[in-house]
Image (cartoon, rainbow, N blue to C red; front, side, top):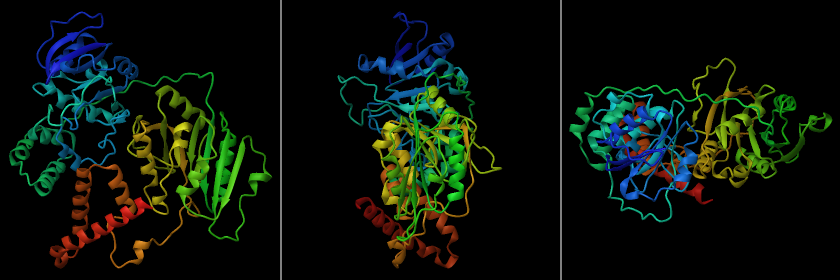
Length: 510
């Protein structure tokens, strides 16, 4: 481990692994990062502000950096290097950071952090000549997170450190922000950022906008280290939960696929739903056939995926839980491959590839995932039993993305693994959703967006993310409005938005 001590991006001291000071590398932290990585290609590189010396938990940081595919930082500041206006254009779940757990984000801090030299060595020093260290760290994380680098902010401080004031901050300026957006987003986002700052902040950064026109888009290629497949002497236990409604034949196929697994599940918990109080179960085969695992069958007359999954989760006891749909097909090695991947990556949740027949695989690398597939994921049993699907989303959409955010807020990253794959049949009948007329649909004042969508955004996004979404939605809707109504549409939209907020708050309180 090579440690770079700096003050606002200027190197003070560099300490080698043997405790010897490296005097030959000086100047900016940006230059030092590349020079140290070149000189010590097999080492991890750690940085932090000199004034924090002795306040970093090196054992915790060393443990994190044992994974060669991780970039991590720790911040003592309430703000990031990049101006918070970046939130206007970034919809991902990586922005509202919970600092008391390792939280997935590409927002890196110069306060403290670390990365393997091999990650830095995939880049050219010349491409970052003259850039501040904060800019460089964020550029690396933003570029490489979507290509397989796991990026986090983590609580790495000892108890002795004192919190800094929020204004005691090493920050980039507005020109840095616009340059960053132009280099790492599509060109139109520069204009949208400008509109957001003008409308919501009453700022007019014309100079920063114009200067970004002369900046070229940056694209860097990162090749994540190969995950070595190893033979595990013991494979942990796994339970399967399946909500179902009106898909008996499809569910039977799922159970047959589970019965052929090279690593059998311990239990399969099936929650069958039928709103008709006089109905009886359609799943006779659960008792008529012999199964190589325990089946727990709950037949209920309340429909809804959230309730059904919560019931199923309450009956799990295994080390891991496979969240499954009732209309999927998969090969005999799926569960073993999934559990092996979890052990090799050292994560608490993997999202499987879940494509329809003939659908092309878009994402081919193991990456930090922005969503959570509630019908194609394996999650830590301990953690999954700690959480619940929020029934405020019942009979709507958003319960899966909300559950993914609950996982992240507990410190569990959601990792997409393209090689742990199943087929989603998208059965045309049955399922676990029922068309329910919501209370707000009966009212004259209609909400826009859907209150469940608003609930998610009010809960899990930052204020500026919500404002950016509001403006994007308004502009999208404005395109569809007849010309004669465009001038008056702003008032209509405001009313629809406020109605949505009202109902979202109602759902949250229930």
